[in-house]
Length: 385
Image 1 (tube, one colour):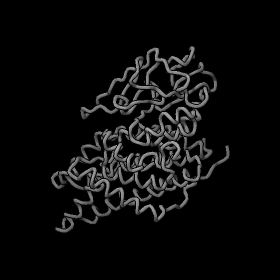
Image 2: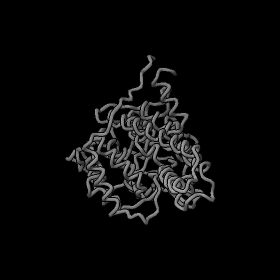
Image 3: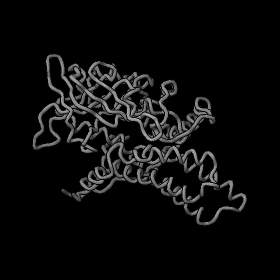
């Protein structure tokens, strides 16, 4: 395989997006007051009312065709809205996956009936989707999925289990990757995707309680679950191509390096207050500066990927690299902050941000593909494997 150079071009956000940024900040001041608890991780905060308010502003489905409830705005405009919501720690979990990848998947591969049924409702902030990719004992090896769909009159019958499906106990639908043919030498063949109604008989959603006592991830069990032929996404057997295109949207956004942003904000605020009293060393300043420099670099890389998406490219390797480096950064931020400021010198806000992020951080390198999978994608894309 011939080596393929990475395509990170120096792309800046258009000046016109700054007016939109100001609008989003004003909206957040009104709809999400500073008194509410903040966390920059996109899985924190399932708030249908907030999602519907965003939909009313036209900030869900921003790049989609107007014919399906979208707004035909640029990926750069969508990027600005995304990073402002994350930076503010807004409760975006309800609509997040539907906006980020389920809607684009249906627009690209779905039938006209599927687009009419689902896409406009997603754009209004009223329809929420989960991901049905991972399975028990499979890790991020999607080609090893064992959930099956057997064709019957009028549709298919699904049996099997999906795991780590965020918010499946709250959301309406799931796009599930299943086997519609027996495994063969070509591990990527015989896979298909279906739209699954999570509230119908034959599907059991089992929330998984985490260390904090909260329930975000889920195990989803299908037992003779009937799904109509109309809910097959794309062509039978095309699931692998579809799911890999979907992951390009999942891996490259600012959520891949902003999950620990509240820590950075509160660390900078604490050091600024202490610097006014002459209590900050050059080493502490350098450590904060190092985190900011890495953040700026990751942001430039992510914006470059947004530019590729705007052109209609499929930057799978670049997206994987953003996620791999971004996840490493997200785990680095709380460690550096903990060392820069001892417990007795931290503000209450910094401690709260640290606690939230440290409890969530084990999931950072799992969702969207483990680091081993991502490094394989990068190596193959560069012709090194």
